[in-house]
Length: 345
Image 1 (tube, rainbow, N blue to C red):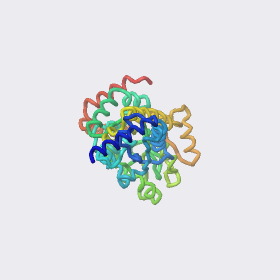
Image 2 (image 1 turned 90 degrees about the horizontal axis):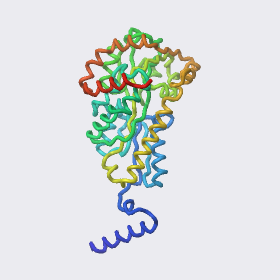
Image 3 (image 1 turned 90 degrees about the vertical axis):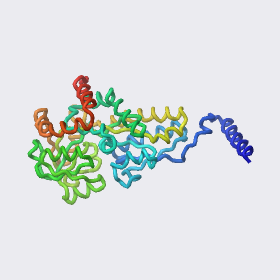
Image 4 (image 1 turned 30 degrees about the vertical axis):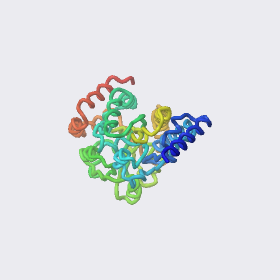
């Protein structure tokens, strides 16, 4: 029986080789579908980046690796903070995830949520594309998930239904929806607000009903989600933190692929991430910020803080920065601060 099984397997490999497929592909065990988790759908730059990655992999592997998107973190019932653990455990095969959502499992990712650390896009690039980014990838790898590329959700700006925000006092008592991060709670509490943890699925109905006053998200998310239609008529561009995204693969899935296909998947991630960052920043990096003009045209009052106004907010949250620096890793934060200081503007 064993001999017959061996001969059958050998014949199968020979058949595949005769069709022009490498022996490695014949021996590799590939799934019919790989599940890619993402928070936001393809109407948003975040989901679009995931879609680009999936399409590039499918095309470049001639369909050997077929990836299906699962938006809304549906594979973990919408609980964004469980996503990283689910990838490590194999419930999720691949993901394009947020540094915020994964920070409870990987403390170093809280670096990006430190209030007012990143003054501009050049600062973000200097950190993620340099030594700090490499160190964080090593940490994620040790935590059991394989990181491949850095993407970006963008700078998170604040909107609300009450009034314009130009100084910390304007936030006093305001109920602001935030993601499930202790650092976010500390930041908004320090500013006198009432931060409320809530999933994105629950956030929009809460804004529409007035259960919460405001939220913070990238401008691209604000636009795609049409938040001006749920009472969010005041926006402040304060750039208090940037949310890089990370393209990752479950390690067992990665090891099940041939070396050639691993190279394809990684390069596809790098290419997709580059495209996704450009999409995420479009309309905000140009001198006249055309995306802001679109928001204003919807009847939204936009307040764009200058450097002096931003510093007032930074000073008001300095105690949070000081508290979290050792938890994230003093050396890592020092490295980031140095990279930002030496960046090319």
